[in-house]
Image 1: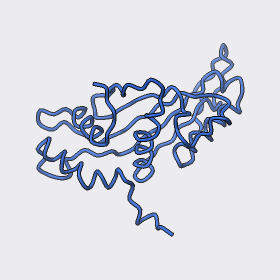
Image 2: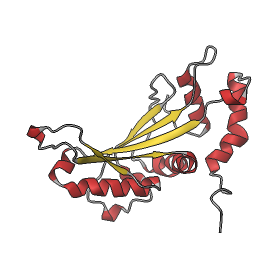
Image 3: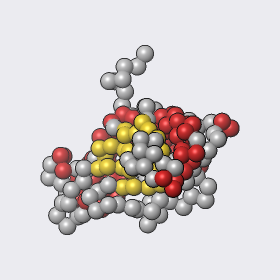
Image 4: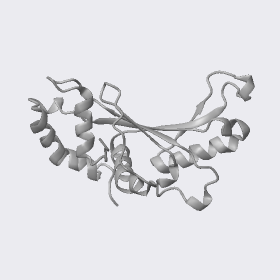
Amino acid sequence: MLDAQDYTPRLKALFRGTIRAAMKEEFGYTNDMQIPRLEKIVLNIGCGAEAVRDSKKAKNAVEELSKIAGQQAVGTKAKNSHAPFRLREGMIIGAKVTLRDVRMYEFLDRLITIAMPRIRDFRGVKPSFDGRGNFAMGLKEHIVFPEIEFDKVDEVWGMDIIMTTNAKAFGEHTADAQAKALLKHFNMPFNA
């Protein structure tokens, strides 16, 4: 049996083997600690009004997000009550999970190599950075992941994916430019 400590995901090995050297040459870093790397990936599904009408929908979203992530997702709760929408404080209205290290690299690999090619009319992702080197994207259908059995899905959810890097401005290079270069080395299919 393979020990978890002996296992290195494909993209993590790629980062250690070739991406770090390529980034160091491209941006002229003087120290390996200056090279940006992925810190975490946060996945989020918002159920909205569907969860208010039927609480089982939110529980299904938590279960399906857990299958996609490979670790237990948690329900996101409403912070305030809103009577016109029949929303009560504390109701589960979505699901979220934070991935780090091995699970993060495994998810990124499945996203880029399996899920994105399954998206209908896919023409690449829009580079959407926040100014601090973090990338956000959305999927319209969570069923593009192979872990979800299409026949057993009762509701198709949209999904937010946020990739957090530790990129900092370096010389004339912005944190966003460095983060985009890092994700390009992971073969993220940007359309611009």
